[in-house]
Amino acid sequence: MSDDVPLDEQARRLTHAWRRWWWLWDLYFAIGFVAVTLTLLGEDDTSTLDHTVAIGATVAMAVLYITFGRPAIAQHDGDPPPWKGRTFMVGMVALLLTGVLFQQAMSFALFAVCPLAFMSLDLKEAILVVIPANMVPVLAAYAEDGMRAMVMQFFPGTLFTITFAVLLGAWITRVVAQSQERAVLIKELEESREEVSRLSREAGVATERARLAAEIHDTLAQGFTSLVTLVQAAESELDHDHAKVRKHLELAARTARENLTEARALVAGLTPAALGTGSLDTAVRRQLSQFAEETGMNVVYDADGDSSTLPTALEVVLLRMVQESLTNARKHSRATEVTVTLRVDENHAALQVRDNGVGFHPELPVDGFGLRGMRNRVAQVGGKLTVHSGDSGTTVELEVPR
Image (cartoon, rainbow, N blue to C red; front, side):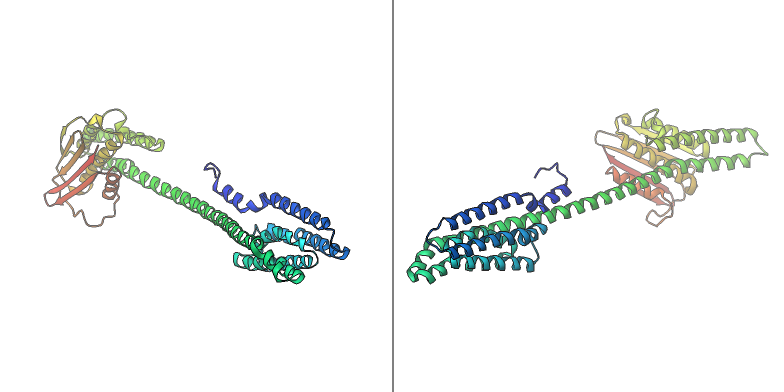
């Protein structure tokens, strides 16, 4: 079946295959009914009573099929309720037996009865019906002409008919069962596809939430922290040094503008604003210069290699690591000096941020998002993040493959 057909449509087609091909079965039974009737009428050596009973049995079989058997089989896609299938076949075999007793040519109706048995019953029950039904003409020959006639009737004709009917019926039953199993599997696959789609949507939402959380933490939250620090510094100098107050307010205004730019970039799903106007090296230098102005710390930067050839995804991770490390140094370390080292070669990019603050225990659980967010970012690009911290300060090292 074509791959471009939806699974639910494929299942519907398989489920209703019986109904689509019923016109072939109807044609087959119609041809069989006409053929048997003409055969019965063509025999001249039988009495009017025999003709009447045999043809009556044939007509009754046709009526039983049209009014009871066909609706039961078609309505349940070839698998009618057991009581309906058994009732139908009991009636068909009884009419066949009646017709054969009065006119042996009625045995040709077996070509219609045998397929109906496999369509109405399960395989074992159908075989138990087909074999005795095919023996009816043999018994009729024995009753009329004796043992020799019975043996001639059974070998090879009836034996071949029984074997062919059983094998063909078993094959058809298996084909139908496989089609029904395939329809069930397609339905289950469709349900699984819907479940996978739902889980994918939820995973996408969760990933996007995590990305937004990391971006907000690394940009807006850090910017607001800088604003608070600068405003507090300006407030402390308000009555003493107006020049310092003005400087702090200018830095606060610049930080606010940069934060606004970052917010717009975040909403638009763009790269960090700091990378939008230059290379990673330029962005890091700008961050360090602003950090030194705001905190008064001594900042040392050492770069080696061409960082302009790095993919944007790696530039973002490296820049965010610098920002997060500087924020931690500002908020927690009470450091007086920060050293940033960037190394870029053909295969890797390595970044180290070291301060001389009080340090912390990197394995202890923390309430903040920073270190956890950094680890998540690094994992997304297949990098390695190492944090060393103690009384002499904190060193954060990152290595990412290009």
